[in-house]
Length: 156
Length: 456
Image (tube, rainbow over all chains, first blue to last red; front, side, top):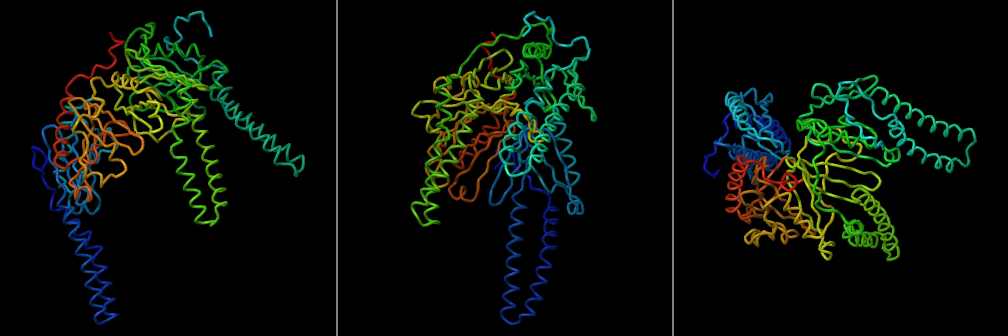
């Protein structure tokens, strides 16, 4: 869909990290639901567990959809980033316009050895962010973007 | 002013200079004037209290005024400036010394601003707009008005690598504002909302209070306060834009305006990121419109400028449409001003944007992306493709259900972006990539030929 280039997805590690994050939230919920079900007992308890599991399942599938929606392409002159499940967005940033490239990794991301690459231009509204790249890929992308950006830098 | 033609008012010899010795009076005077307003209030409010109390508070106010004068005096004593090794250097601060160096080559514009109090003393402030950090400290407040103009032209000459004695390039006058028109325009600008607000107030009062009389009273009270607020805003706008003149010099547009506080500003051609043509509904019978400008700048908000915004926002506050369009064609040469056929969004976009569909339009060529939006006031943004920072396409759930999408085009300005709303999904995809290609081609081209009149 991205014009002449195919979008590359982000690393499956991102999905692993997301699932781990979800599990940290979901397991206590599930435990609480089971305890509650034991306390209530009977059909009511079973319904409670089913409801909680259903909610968690929906959350899981939404997260998976969001993970799958991410995509990026390094084209000849610009970087294309696509994201969003409900609100679909495609952002195109010319290399020459990049002012600053951030590579960040939180504790969970570091555990899974992934990082987020964020591009800034002189426009505040530019929202080009690629989460969940392997650390080596993120560093390589940053260096590459910095090198190209320097070569093509244009004034405002 | 001294008419004895000072050969060079700039301290080119590298010696330190001081600001005008009258500047502490102006700086401290503003606060003093504010505090003097308080004294009558104290006198009135203290009717029942003892006399000693009253004298004490008046003495307190006088003390504060004296202290502020003293602070202004100290600030003047410790402030000095010079030109040394290609830098304009300003040092200030008694306890915390601050030294600002502005490389002359990076100066983009020099503005001269004269608030009312400064004008009384024959002074003016010189503000230096430079690439990179622009801020509170890049200014010389105050210099004698004659010197300020000379400093301005000499700094500009040095910034262009010329001899300091080079006279300022002559400016070609473009348009001048008609002040009676401005008066009518500022009055009608806010008036659109008035009946709605008063009506809503009356309605709310009737529902809550249950009486028509109470409703009328509330409506009257609310209406009155709104009228006062609006007339204050109108007076302010009138004061700021009075006598507005725009002219064009080799290095940019020159703006002169102001009734009590006069401003002389420059917008370098290269810093114009986008312009916006605004057509308020109440101006339509007169056939007037307004032209605004978005200028590149650093992220704002860290230090707000006390003297109002440092960058000009308006190229023409109000003028007949054909004049505004002519000015627009000077700023954005060869731009297509009227929406061409095919620039309107499909009918089904009415469901997504029922209140603004009638104005929505977007068109682009190899030079500009132009988009029109607005509910009761039509606003058309013209953005040169050479200034594009990023292009985005977004579609929410409702838009996707209607097979619509919006294309945003960002520039380095911070006020608006070009938004092609409610476009057909297929079309928006094509527009996105054609804008990306167009912007790449435009970046490769040399900058467009604005400013040709004066450069000739």
